[in-house]
Length: 224
Image (cartoon, rainbow, N blue to C red):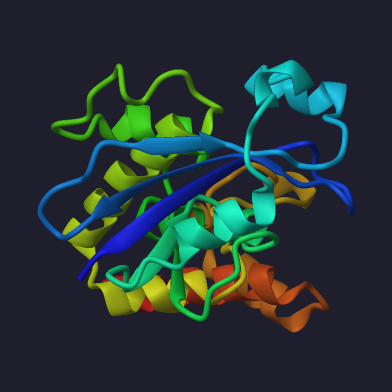
């Protein structure tokens, strides 16, 4: 089974923004392919705030193909069984496919809830995965290197959990690993006592917060 990790750099994140670079690499369960990348013509200006992240300017895109057909070709590979991105809600705004997605961010929140941060680069450096070529993973915030780093995070996740589990986690809203309110703000859900967790479940919090409390409570029951 081949999973293609995809990353986009864009003109911004507002309505009407568009991709200016796509990067991808494939993981077949054994090996991760070298990253590939393509600059794209977005047809709209690049926001300065976006350039501050990826350092791409309009002059860098001279002669680049129109983004829609070029990106469609990357997504249309017949031998690819599923796609992966670090935060799929971003990539799926522009990447059209009927195939399943793995979100390494949502899965990392589940697999490593105790990590201080769950950004792609924070996870990559904390895991320090065997075989990752630092040259291919640089510079960060460019599409090819970020797709390559995501592929190694995917590989580490698959060493711990089957693909079916990752797909299920990816289909759910992100699970917050830490409390985001009140006097327990910033503390791990796993560190909370039963009384607090039961209180959260009785209150009108959003579904992600309640799921975090419920799962922490279930883990406590398993430990007793």
